[in-house]
Length: 428
Length: 169
Image (cartoon, rainbow over all chains, first blue to last red; front, side, top):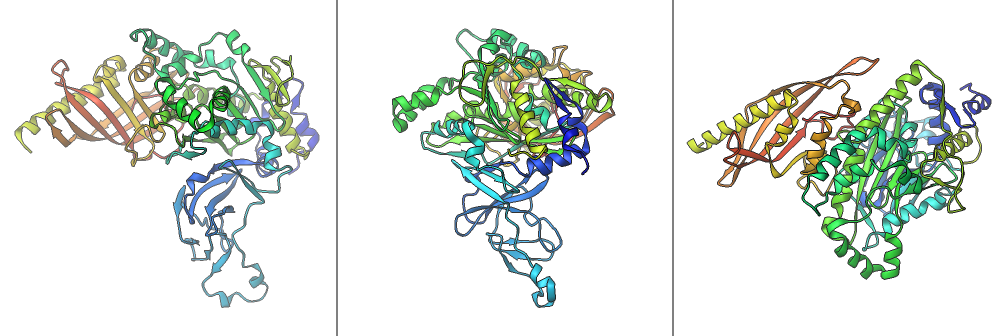
């Protein structure tokens, strides 16, 4: 790879970024090597691995991995590639096996990844014997409150240092469960788009696009809501109409940026749980006490971005993985979590949010995907400088590294600061 | 099959033919009117999903959320529908899954091709295929004598990551 640090740094200047960051093949390869292969990435949840032998597959950047629960109860993340001829050992998205058996020649590994048996082992002689390998474990993996994070190569910081203040968003998701834990719904939902992975991360805390890009959905929901009988509200319509708020209302919300490129902003969709609110609050108060329950429900945030791989919504129990495939192809994988100990109906609004924010059929996401793909086509055909300069005046000191009006593009600038740190070799 | 069931199946075929015509002609409000007031439109991610509220779906909308999806399609600024998709639907004859006094269920396999012109790009042709299950309830005011309480679409590739979809399947 012969892109100099100097030329990478030249792609980001005061309030602007060059659109080749979305299109350049060499930059993409470097992003995988220096960013996605060296940062903590969310992979899944412990509840997806109920027993020894349970596994699910995923990717760390471009590298296929498998998370598997061992006989010892430990969860490990192994590179999903047989050391013999390179076949993928675990198939499909999830399953349960007594041992990890390569489907090509039957090389067999313990659930820990340790080599157990190979056919005609005696025929491997000489130096080749020393190269009979276990399945390789990634450099680092940790669970944070049941959520599994891994890094392919040794990360520059511990998971807790990397999460920093962002951990409070994950805490809030788990704290909302009266039973003290959450459980992943048994199905993941995926969509993809023909554009760069960064475009989603640069959109998720963008409040200004909502009124414009999603105007048709917001207006349709307003028309339908107005025709409802007085006093009748619908949670999905409320989510759609939230996008029609005046810009002033968005400006009043606070955006928080954090070291590492993470960010979030204040609640923009309804935070009430609707009809089930009372029953749920009672369950939470019983479990946590009144003061703590109030504190937990008082943490009102919209989407949090854990740079560079995932987004988190505590109130709506939804986590999404942004999975780069090529410079111009990205897959998004959605998880929704049941709150243990909560009344049955509590999942309903979260499910609608998960569908609305991760389904390719969403009346909102389809707008965003169309925009991303248009940006990608224009960047390829007419490369040039793009603006990320909006609103640099900070609010009074708060958590994280900066607090801004939620109409600011500070969170995008913060992502590029982190991006440059990774791409040019500085510590993350 | 009893003669009563044969009559019912004929009525279901009329209903599905009406649905195909309305969707072809982009008469979405009239299509919505084919549903009961508690009707729902469901495209699950997994064919194993039995409850739409226990796991995510591509679409699970009852009314009035479904009304908003339909209303949006009449807005001139629906970006992913500029220009609108053209759709060709093929539908196989439905069969009866259950027939009770208060309703019936029919299943009809379908194949659908969507043509979408992507600006500055290739014209895209996409195939959707699978089975539609209709849970129908009698309603003497409906043209076929039945309304849709549930339309469930099981796509053969339901677990896939899809590019954006703005048509009704």
